[in-house]
Length: 334
Image (cartoon, rainbow, N blue to C red; front, side, top):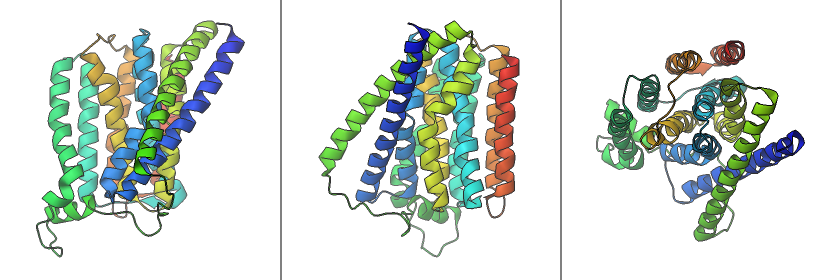
């Protein structure tokens, strides 16, 4: 494929993928409001919708045999998510805060899945063990998010027990600042449009990865740079745009839930599950360092969010600076 055609295909595919992902996320969000879903579940659905470009791009790269690119897309995307979704939101809104119980729930799940995926990629865990342990973490989490408001709300409303606070947080609904769902599309029309959006996301991701691999070969761009620095952040733009909207509206629970759910979905659907079907390439030294950085910055993000008053602007700026340092380190190491 000539470079000019590859560049054109990349730009068109990127535009189609990002536009379809944005519409996908908005339509799922509208369904959540229409059915009265709590914030925790809306955050999960939004993350699932906005993760389409990252997962599709990573899986297509794995199918093409570009394992380093596929894994790099998800590692780069997860690091970008922490900086752009939580960090940038805190900078624009002044701070991001949420109930400690929700932070503990979302943070522990996200951190454990990151550790399991990283352990598998560096050869410390077999794919079967990583998948089984991930299921032990994710199944109870999904039960809590979907039915937690009913399962845990038995203590009196005035109770200060952790179970009661977690129940109220999980069952929290969007505040009055949220725009109501006034559009009259029937539910089945929304579902049909969601399926169409998904088809566009997959097709756009395939074209984007195909053209990017062609250009990387012509321009001698390394797999680490292509996946971590280029495709990872670009495919995460829908997530970042949605997160900033949530952050500026003061919806910290949905914002943090979307961020950690996004990272968890990326690693589960893009790394752990595919490893059960194909043998992934052993992680190189640079990839191991990137995984270590991702674990460290995940812990740092949780620590900053756990501070009294949540993550404030100065801490968020430090998080963003760390991401740019990570990018520079990847460019130098490659």
